[in-house]
Image 1 (cartoon, one colour):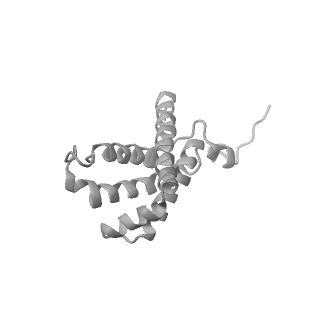
Image 2 (tube, rainbow, N blue to C red):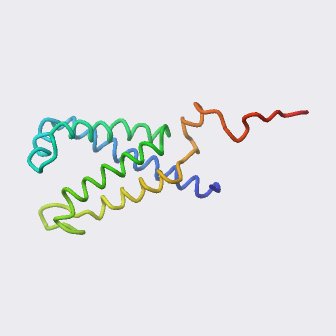
Image 3 (spheres, one colour):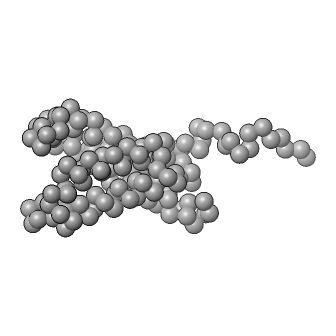
Length: 142
């Protein structure tokens, strides 16, 4: 990926990381038991609220620092697909006046899918932890 695309990917990674972190944080702060009850009421096992909120919270932090970008992004894609299909699709693209539609969820899904496909190495903690495979086995001679 060229430098301009990489800068764009970093911006997307950090912003979507912040968004998901805040969503996960609010779920725990506002009473995860309430979210679990709501999940039950719409036919999703209540324990999934803990899983979704944890993915959002921990995954958000991971994206902000650039750790496991592709794996976390795939998890975000799955979360957004679940939200769109199970909750938002019924109220339409723009919503029904009582609940927002799935337009924003679709944007989050697209950003997450982009990051799952392309990753983001610039300003990434993952790059500090993983040896660059392109230079593995090469020796510099002076």
